[in-house]
Length: 409
Image (cartoon, rainbow, N blue to C red):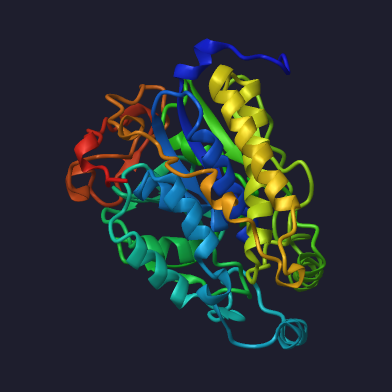
C-alpha cells in the first residue's frame, strides 16, 4: 500500500472499531484514537467493541457519542479506585508461587476485587449500547456479549446464542478484564443452565485483538476495521507477573499471546510509536494520562491520513491540535514542583463528538457475514431461541436502532 495514499473515496466507508487489551494503556491510548476518529470522514459505525481494558472506552463512546465527555471522564477518573487490593503485590506473587493454581478453571478470588469497577460501569451505562460488544473466555471458548444476548463458541465451529438476555455492562466489563489470579473470574450461567467462570478475553489464541469477533458479528466487506493494538507490555511489573505466570502455568509462556495483526486495504491497525506506561499502572497523574492519550491520537492521525479518512483541512486541523497539545505538555508551569498543566490544554479538544448519523441504522448486514446479531430493536427472545445455532447458512437480519434511540451528547 502506498504510504502516502489519501484516496478520498475511502472517506465514505463504514467503520468498525476494536480496542484491544492493555489495561490503562488501552483505556487512554484508545481514547486518543477515538479523538482522532471524531475528526475523520467515514460513513457509519457498524460496531464498537473492546476487550479487557479496551472495553471501557468502547462502551463509553458507544453509549454517548460525545468524545470530549469521554476525554474528560478518563482524565478525571481515578483508575486506582476501581479495584480494591486484597493483598500486597509481593504477598500475592509469593502465594501464587507457593500454591500454584490452574487458570482453567481459574481461582475464584484474585489479588484485586473488581466489584467497584462493575458498579461504576453499571451506573455510568445503565442500558447496553446498541453498537457495543465485548468478549470474555470460558476455557478457550469465546463468550461474546451484545445487546441482543450472549453468543458462545460451539463444538465444531461457529457460534450459538447461549443466553437470550444481555448482562449489565459492568458485569461484561468485569468478565473481559478478569486476568486470572489478579482479578476475580465472573460466574455466568447459560439459558440451558450450564455454569461458566469467565476470564479476560485476551487470553485466547488471537491474543490482544480478536478480530474474528467483529468479522463474525458483522459483514465487513466495503468497510474499515480499525484495530487499536497497544502491543506487548514491557514494564518491569508486567514482565515479573509474566514470569510468575509462566512458572505456574507451564502450558503458557505469557499473559498474552503475541499475535500480530496485519494491516491491509480493509484493516487499519493503530499502534504506539514508542512504549507506553505499564498496563497495571492505575495510579496516574493527569500529565501521564495526557501523554498516553496523545500517543494514541497522533498515531491514529497518521494511520487515518494514510488511508484517506483524514485529508485536507480536516487533517491540517487534527495535526495542528495534536502539535499544540504536545507543546503544552512539554511546557512546565510554576511552581515546577507541583507539575501543573497549562489550562489551555483542556480547551483544545472541546466540542468533539460523533454526529448522530454515525450511529444511524445500518439497513441490512450483507449475507456474507458469518453471523449477524446486533443492533436489533426486537426483544432478545424474539430474535432467536436460547441455544439456537447461528451460522452463515441461517443469517439473522436485524432491524437496527433509529437515530432517535441514541443517547444525546
